[in-house]
Structure formats: structure tokens, C-alpha cells
Image (cartoon, rainbow, N blue to C red; front, top):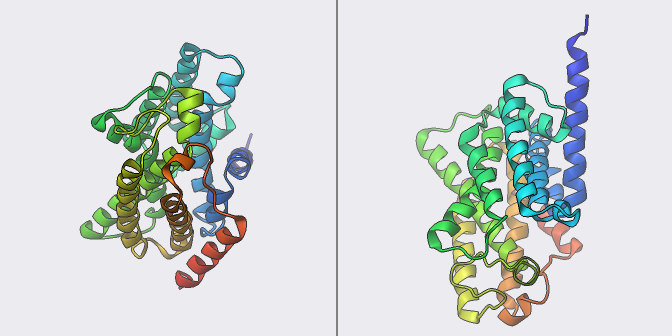
Length: 289
């Protein structure tokens, strides 16, 4: 007879694989995640692992391997179905999917958040330009729902009242939206030249004027301000990490704001490692209690 330790070992291995994906793909998010309380840390890595694999199907190594859009769509559909099957069965042969499914069951993450995410990923396969409505829908599915997934992990043992929960939900969505908009700006040139995409509705592909940049950065600052107001309501074990992530992207926004619009097209704005560490230290000191 096989005891429960066999499944525990498999789940530990699956979560380890998700952490490897996180550490290999994101230094900033990885650093922030390390500031989480141990009970949250593997679940956030599990969410990141699935999100990253889906994104790599869209226009990463899958495209480099020669898969055309139709083949990548089949892979995305199969991945989404495998996620639902794994949640239902309690097992997947795909270790990243298995890790995410464990977190989904633990935190109550269902199709209400999973389906919009995959819908936005599919949109990337033939996306060239978005109008205002499509832009909001894309950002919600690609980024805001990820923030909401993380929030469900954080609130598993918390009992905020209705007003507090509303602030927390808005903060998670707005932080995700700010992250996505900043990444759109950082990748503006590559998206236009390499992928033929223009995410911002009022920005021509491969071109950005100062007025357009100002409008975008103002919306990012508004998102970040709304998100900051929610940090104090998070469980103590999540505040330092979320504050660090918030601080890192706030610093990116400031650097983008100081950079001439035409220069953003040609280089990706980054935060030096020393500055990242300082931001993490400040967040840790502020939210240590």
C-alpha cells in the first residue's frame, strides 16, 4: 500500500520545479517572493510557474522552436485543460501544472480567474493593436487576475471585513495593472519591431511621444497609489514582499518618467541590483512588524 508520503514527495518536487522557473526567469519577483512568510512562498512560486510557461508558449521558446500560431494555440488550449483536469483529479504529469493545481485547491482559485488569464494569452497569438475596451480586458486577464490569485493565497487564513476586502481586491488588481503597463513600456520597441504588436490604444507601433508617455505614466502612478493603500490590510507575512514589488515597479516608473520618450523605444529600462536591494531593505524595515 502506498502511503500519503509518496504524494507529498511528488508535490514537493513539483513546487521545487516552479521555484526553479521563478528564479531562472525573474530576479525582481524572485527577490520579493523570498520576503514572504514560508507558508505563502511556495504557492506564489507555483502561480508564477504556470503563468510563465503559458507566456513562453505564446511567443517565447515555442515560437523559436518553429511552432506556428495555430500550433501554439493548441498548446495553450491543452495547458488550460490540463490545469482544470489536475485540479479535479489532484494529479498531473506536468510538474508545473501539478504545483499550480495544488495551490488552486488550497486557495480556491477557479475558472473565474484561470479562464481570463488564458483568454489574454490567446489574444497575443494574433494581436496587432488594441482599442480601449480590448486593452482593459487584456490587462485584466494577463495581470490583474494574477494579483487576485496571489491575494487568495494571502487571505486563506485572514478574515477581512467587506470594506477591507474591497480595498484589497482593488489593490491587487491595480498593482497587477501597473506591473503590466510598465512592462509594456519597457518592451515597447521589441514588441513593435519583433512581434508587430502595439498594446497601448493611443500609441502607434514603435513610436511614443512625450504626451503619450505622460498619460501612461500618470495612469501607472494612480494604480500604484491605489495599490499602496491596500498593503497595510494584507496579512503580516505578505506585506514586506508586496511592498518590495511595489517599490521596485515604482522605481521603474520614475526612471521611465525621466527617460525621453524616443529613448524608451531603443532600450529597456532597468533598476540596478544595488537599488533593488535598498528598496527591499526599506520595505522590510517599514513592514517588519
